[in-house]
Length: 327
Image (cartoon, rainbow, N blue to C red; front, side):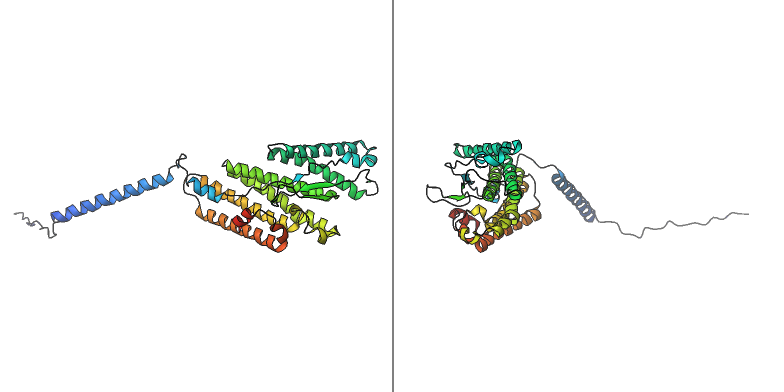
């Protein structure tokens, strides 16, 4: 038998071949896409790369503008003041060794404060440290007189004499305010400490040490807050001459002034936070900068409104250039 085989014809390709121009176009598009991917990768690497510390993020003019603060003089004791705790409380303290030692230490610290004012160059850091040693001694004497008034008999009258640092003195002659109250001495000492810390903050700001300056301004704000919220209201509530002495008293002893200066130093502390962000290399968090600037503006506005409503008399005695700047 014969074997038959079937013949299968080759199938013909019915598709269409690509034209030469079309193939070249596809290749060009592929190359262009790869080039875009490489450019995007390079851009991401530039963002992730650490910033160059030698190039600040913002010019010095922006930093100076954002960190501009006002330096206040600190209150000072009348050089003619010859007050002595040891001589004034000699009879009641002579039989108590610890009390006598406290009086001597108080006199020593107060003399150091007076000598620091008399020196040609005042070190605010030294002044702040001396006041931190002096304040507990005043408080100890004040507490003793408060709980044992029958024992606290004076051999010599106490007369404290201070000049304001907040008020602007147009003439060369200083306007001293005299008071026999131990509370007046305590208030003026705390206010002096607050403004000393504020001046230390100004020095740090000039040196570009914004975080340190922010901490110093926060300390000043805390001291003024204690005066305005606790110490002065309790003292004024017990004072019978409050209405009479309101206009003549120093600005540092007024509740409205201390409340206002709390807001001012909070604003200054936030300014230093802005400076801290702007001085860093790289792109800052502008949302955070905006919030800090808004908070600074609100605190400054609160400072002005509080002064106008509660201490307009003492506001008129401040430096006109400062009021022009802040308003």
